[in-house]
Amino acid sequence: MVSGQTTSFVYDGDGNLVKKINPGGSKTLYVGGIYSFPFGDEVDKSSTGTVTGTKTYYPAAGAMRVGSTLYDVLKDHLGSASVVTDTSDRNWVAS
Image 1: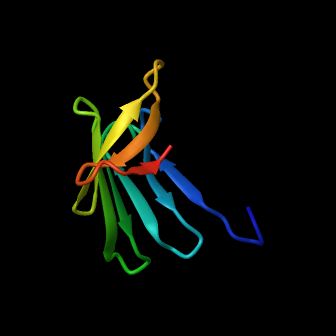
Image 2: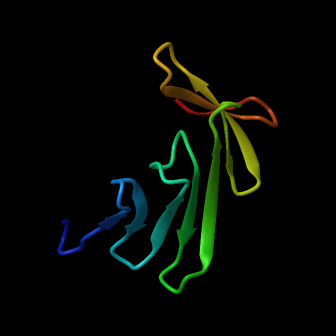
Image 3: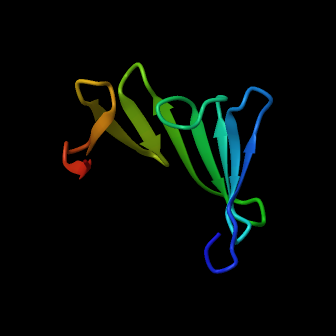
């Protein structure tokens, strides 16, 4: 809790994260039963329920889609995501 604001987390019966509720009422839904990356989808919604963003992860292909942009997710020797590149021009996005 920071400055009197709380972020809440909702889990299913198996202990998987299914929803994060932010202080302003916006939500992130985790579809697929396992906490987002590297499996499943994330759907961000405003406090009024409007979808404000989506992320889809493709673990077998080593990719993720944010909105309409496709990214490659490059893994290190332990299998952790270490570099993200934009598939359209191969520029590094994050590392």
